[in-house]
Amino acid sequence: NYDFIRKMKGLTQLYIYSAPNLEDISFILDLPRLRYLFINDTGLKDLKPLLKYKKKGKYDNFSLLNVGIVKSKIEKIPPKLLEQRFSQFYVFDSPVEVKKL
Image (tube, rainbow, N blue to C red; front, side, top):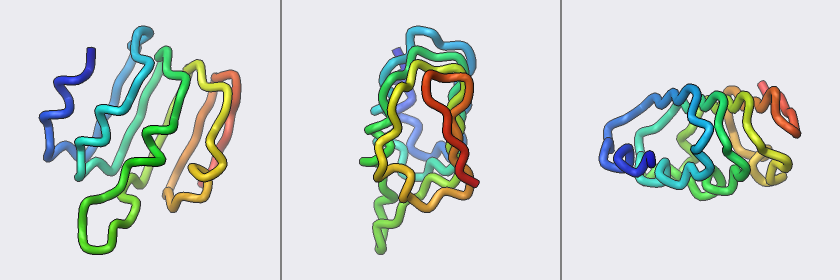
């Protein structure tokens, strides 16, 4: 259970390695300063929480700059997610792969 991370409001970088039971990343919605997200070797299937992640600020801009997902169970990337302004976004070693730099 990664819900304890919700309380880390000042977190700007999050790296999770080898968490096969991690299927839900909705806890990132409570991390307004998060800029870098890397998740490796998880049971993650859904990236929809990333669509809801917005910086809570004056312009409500997307604040995640870099997202890396490796060895997940993701089968589909929401098209709107690829329209976001990431510096880097990639999914590798998963049923679906994408690289947007």
